[in-house]
Length: 177
Image 1: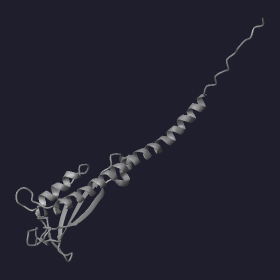
Image 2: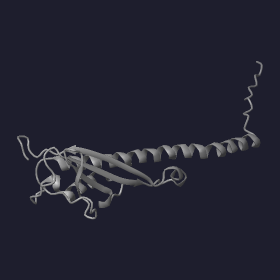
Image 3: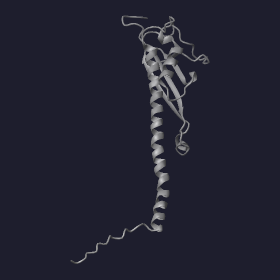
């Protein structure tokens, strides 16, 4: 019987030059990939923050136009504290203060007649004589966005997020004032 010698093919390994080239390619491409990845994450955070501000303005305007009172006898459409609280309850990913929620009341001719800003002397605070059925309440919520990743933050850091929502106030289905 003849002997058959089976030889394994030589496994060709990477030379030092090939490994160095791969490392160099990774070093050149990795920062751009990470910037893209973190940019997408920060953009998603920005959209989430804007959605929260938008929802806060919508819910505050809804609160101001619902029927009923705040439990202390103040009608909801005149309850400035309740309107601000309704906005803050929905905006959980952005810090907002009382000054970040603006509430303005308009009469039927779209003229501003009152607001919820105690420091504003141009418009009085709302009372039942200024706001009638069919009046409109406009709520604006402002917030700011700060990025977590400094490289991405250079583009969007300190972005101001504003949302304004308005609804009509109906004091009663069968009449009111």
